[in-house]
Length: 271
Image (cartoon, rainbow, N blue to C red; front, side, top):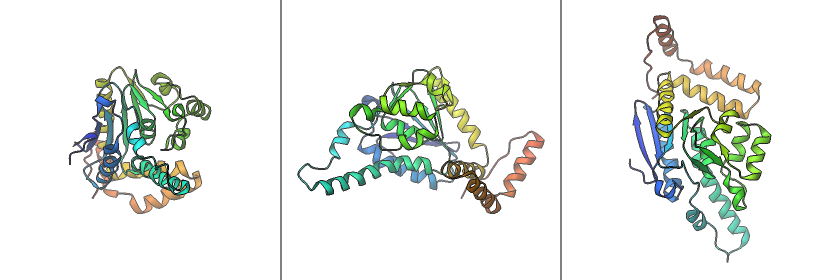
């Protein structure tokens, strides 16, 4: 299927979503909010996909939500304020849904960020499993700079990814969070010299993930996500029940034989 807001490709078990509106610094307009949830629904149902890369084109990863689109979604001024605010609340929930789809996706999602990543872009990459950057990359929680509270996931996810005080500073000031600082404080995992080198590095990581048992990778993501939101004891109970029902003897044998023979195991797709 063709999309307007991004290019989409699946090759060698890797799905790549590439934002493609570089003329507007990849601003996230109406097409994005409609299509992004759709593409992730398809990914979660596609047994050929084992890992996802979200990348971008042009100088900046994304300038965030398209302000023209944002303005068009505001409720009219001449209606009952309570009804207007109910409509706005439901719209915010709809905008949260595409990033929830990243978090809930059954396979890992990797973000490759170059240049600026503003506002809703930070919500997007904070929902990803792993973030990688170029040396010129930076993140800005832009919402505070336009007089609003970030409402699409940054304030809920980022505190679990970086130190609390740093998170508060970024959220209160709206300053640049540059690539070297993001690497030093654990928000990103690797920093590359330029965009081409970054994409090659992220592709290499994606190939390593895709070579593993997709059942084991999917289960691992589920366990990490569950533990993030629950106690250690609850997480241990969950993994005990999960492996009691989901452990694949076929995959374990393939992996063990491959390790002993120093060969590469070939795992079946999910169904």
